[in-house]
Each structure stands twice: as structure tokens, then as C-alpha cells.
Length: 428
Ligand code: CTP
Image 1: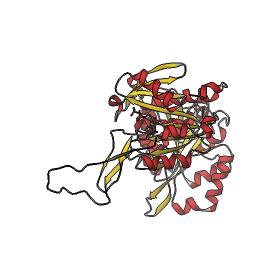
Image 2 (image 1 turned 60 degrees about the vertical axis):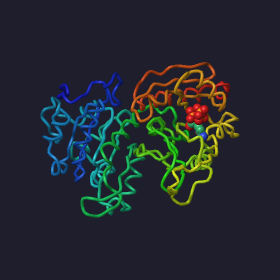
Image 3 (image 1 turned 45 degrees about the vertical axis):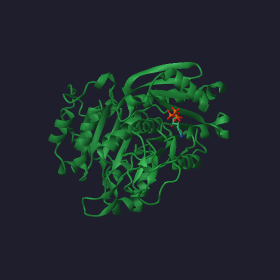
Image 4 (image 1 turned 90 degrees about the horizontal axis):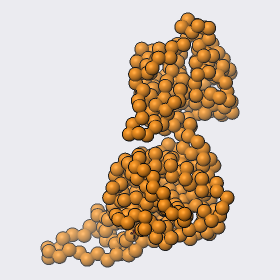
């Protein structure tokens, strides 16, 4: 078995461990035009720290060459069960025993049918059948024409494949190589990467419902102008992603930001603080955790104009009166569920000075068990941040790191508090 060092493997960036460091994946390609995306996927997995062994079916070789996949993975590709490079001539056993997971991307309709019947007439299907089912997970990324995807046989096969222990990663919707439009496209490499990373994450919030607010709000002055702030939404989106990775069912209520929705997260876009409050109150029932990261405008113009406010030539600016917005976090923290300890509320505090004192005072004022402090001007729009976790015990610094890594740490902290038997940890 070849096992040389991979020249494409990255070392940890900025001192943070890579998301897939230490993971070894078999990337299986079956025949489909989506094989062109598998090259990018292979590269993305390796950039994330994984080692990747590519296995291709004969049909996959019609779409992309083993040379491409070898160059990207840094390992010779396996295509045949008779590969004489294996001393024991059992590539199907050796490759599957080494892997943390097997990812079939793309999985054609034909290959899926093969898996379903336990057929084993080529290396990839043989390897899937021979894998130790409890130790080596099988994840599949289907790719096929929309009619093939919708066919009852295919849908039936998905159900059975899941029942047999495989994880079906879903499909994308859109323009297909055949010229038709619909469901059945293979997910994009970055989506698959996010799913694989989530797959390996510890499920510390399994089955819990988590509601997150993120981004700025926008308060209209007139139909073309409004008041907003510099919040990018990155921290809230990272928290939504981290909570989903941890197994939670996540709803993200987002103010106006241009960020992509994390995989597996339900996103609801809102504009004003009032929209955000209404949406949160609609969705908070049944949630176990509420995390308020949004930079909600404290005030809104009292009487927004329905028409664009024009200059009147007098040189005087229009006088805007303001009304205070409801405090969403404080409102949720007052709800019966929060008071009964069934809803764990987490606030954020963007301060410009005296972080520890201001954050502790804000935590008590809003009556939440955990408040996350940061220095606002240092974090808005940035990819990195440093946090201060403030609870009734005092405060703990979390050193500067990427927002995703901070979000994962915060999710662990929340999960630990949810698991703690003492009801006192849930009270402000
Ligand atoms: N928050 C909220 N609704 C508001 C204002 C704030 O839900 N109308 C939440 C934020 O999402 C955050 C926390 O309250 O979790 C603190 O927000 P921040 O803007 O730091 O504090 P303010 O309450 O606005 O207080 P101040 O302006 O005095 O710092």
C-alpha cells in the first residue's frame, strides 16, 4: 500500500488546528459529469487537513482522469480490484480499513442501485460492502438528472440506503449538464466540505433547538434611506454553523447581510428590529437555546416617510424623531420558558471600553446566564476576534482566534452549561 507524504497537505494556519486534521478519507468517484467537481472537492478536503485516497469506477474514468485525481490527492488512484500494488491483492480490504469515512461523490443512480443490492463487481462497490460498517461511515453525494432523481426507484433507494447506515448528503437544485433544470445536481465542493466537517464534529447539542440572531438591523427613514450599523453578521453565522455541526436544529434570524447560509441551517431574513423581534417570538417556542448576536438598532425613526424626503432648498436638514426599539434579548429572557430554566439565553456585548464591567452589568440588566463580551470596533467585519465569557462566576477570556473557532468554543460552553444539573447555572 502506498502511503507517502502528501505535498499538498497544509500545516495548521494561524496556530489553529485544521478542521479535518488527522482524518483519512476514501473519496470514491462513480460515473457522472459531476466528477469535474470532485477535483475541487479533493483539493478542499486536503486543504482542510485530511489525507485523501481516491478510488474511481471505470465509468468515472470517462469523465475525469486518474492522473488529475492523483496530482490533487498526492496519492496514486485505485481503479481495479485486481491492483497488483497491494501485496495481498486485497485493495478493497486495505483501503477500507485505513479510512475514517468513505465519501462517494458523485454517486450515480446506477452506483447507488449497486450499493443497495450489495453488489461488488468493481473495486469501489466491493470496498463499500467490505467496510467495517460500525467504524467506517459511508457518506454519499448523489448526482443525476432531475427525472432520474425524482424516479420512485431512486427515492426508494435513498430511504433504503439510509436504513442500511449510509448518510445521504442531499442534492442541489439548478441548471443541469443535460440542459434541464431541477433537483439532482451534486452539491458544491464547499457545501460537501462543510457537511464532512460537521459529520466529524462532536454532537454536544444533539436534538436541541437553537435560535440565533445575527447581523445589523435596518431602520427606514424613507423608502431609500435608513439607519444601520457595521455589524457583518459573521459571528452569528459562525455560531449557527457551529451549533449545527454540534447536532442542533438551528434557525438563524438574519438582518441584512450578504453571507451564505451555513449548511443545514434554516435562515429567515429580516430587516428592522421589529421584524427581528416578531420572527424571534414566532420561533422561540420549543428552543433550548437563544443566542442574540445581532447588533440591533436601539432606536428607529418615529415616523418613517412613505416617500423620499426631498431637499426643500432651505438649507435645513429634516428633523427626525426617534422611538426606542424593544430589547429582543431582554424580552426573550423574560419569557416563561427562560424563567423556568428551559431556555438558555446568551447575549453579546459590543463595547468600546471597560469590557468586563460593562459586560457583567449588561448580563445582569438583561437577566441572562451568559454574556459574551467583545470590543465592537475591533470585531465588526473581521474574521477574527477575542471574547470574554461573563457569567455569574465571573469572566473568562477566550484568546483571539477565527470567529468559527470561537463559535465552536462557545457552543461547547453552552452545551456544558445545559448539561450541568445545577439550575443556578441557568439563572441570571
Ligand atoms: N439586543 C437585543 N435587542 C436590542 C438591543 C440589543 O436583542 N434592541 C441584544 C444584542 O443582540 C446583544 C445584547 O442585547 O446580545 C447587547 O447588545 P448591545 O448593543 O451591546 O447592548 P445594548 O442593549 O444596546 O446596550 P448599550 O447600547 O447601552 O451598550
